[in-house]
Amino acid sequence: MTLQIGVIGTGAIGQDHIRRITQALSGARVVAVNDINPQQARDTVARYQLDAIVHTDAHALVADPAVQALLVTSWGPTHEEFVLAAIAKGKPVFCEKPLAVTAEGCRRIVDAEIAHGKRLVQVGFMRPYDAGYRALKDVITSGSIGAPLMLHCAHRNPSVGDSYTTPMAITDTLIHELDVLRWLLDDDYVSAQVVFPRKTSHASSHLADPQIVLLETSRGVRIDVEIFVNCQYGYDIQCSVVGESGVANLPEPASVLLRSEARLGTTILTDWKQRFIDAYDVELQGFINGIRDGALTGPSAWDGYAAAVAADACVKAQETRQVEAISMGERPAFYPR
Ligand code: NAI
Ligand code: NAD
Ligand code: ISE
Image (cartoon, rainbow, N blue to C red; front, top):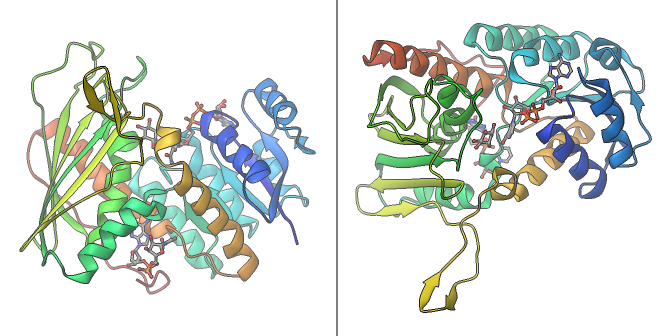
């Protein structure tokens, strides 16, 4: 059976996910699209030659009987409304990060899903599906570097637009580390602090860039994450785990080692879409297969909530310049480890 998907938001990642459902994955097709800009939705249907209806109202798309599952790829502040609407209709929904822009919003989704009685939500945190992070987790789990003690991480983008603000370094960028590091260590955060190095001349006047976030987990692991979104040279994700008896680094993406013109080097990617392209494929295929098999297994609404609780504390820490506590309460039995 082919799963019939409706997509809300046909921007950068909405179109990329439509491309992969249509051209790369199996078991699903896009039957309806919506965007606040209807022309963009129509152009997307034409570009990918979809046999799909363009709904001018997102809630009409959610209610469309032809739509069996939803993809929410509109901008972050709209996610909560559309995910709650999907749950109210009992339809599975894949929601891009963030699940909601506040922890309270994520909690409302958690509560609605629990009240529904069955998992319907998968959050678009793709890094746990990345082969490099999975290999890193295998090394940690094998015990070959001993217990993890410290992590040194970096999330660097070449540049960002003028609309990118200081809190977005947390809610849009660090949110990926907040999710994947929790999964990597199988641990939760207990505190956060943000420090601000000398500002780069490439950042807009209203943006603090770079930033360093210091996290502490319940087992006492210390994590530093450099967020540097105007680093100029590339899209570069680093993660180094220091254990009791060794160090394990996230593998670099495969790239040809080139000897040429008296230089030895490899290319650094510049586009985030390329860096995790395989992980995006695997996460969405997992969503499609999970619906087919009657059980979603990917990043849950609880994972979305956990990342949002930590993000809220980091944003507060940006303002207070103090160490802020992170506490998310008891994990509901509905979301087993
Ligand atoms: P974008 O701005 O290119 O696209 C967002 C689209 O949503 C636009 O076409 C906009 O018109 C539409 N939209 C906004 N409000 C709407 C509404 N009320 N109803 C229907 N459509 C609406 O943004 P982009 O880069 O595609 O990001 C979308 C989401 O995906 C964001 O939440 C972002 O954080 C997330 N994202 C996740 C990535 C990942 O690596 N997992 C990578 C890039 C984005
Ligand atoms: P598992 O799938 O139960 O995941 C291990 C732990 O990570 C659990 O405690 C789970 O709650 C937690 N976790 C999962 N996704 C998370 C996320 N996005 N954010 C925070 N925590 C998260 O156990 P496993 O058998 O070790 O996983 C098998 C492999 O499948 C893993 O390597 C993983 O990369 C991959 N995978 C996991 C998920 C998943 O989210 N459960 C989804 C797809 C693939
Ligand atoms: C984008 O929103 C993402 O989610 C990408 O994965 C991220 O790394 C990039 O910096 C963001 O702009």
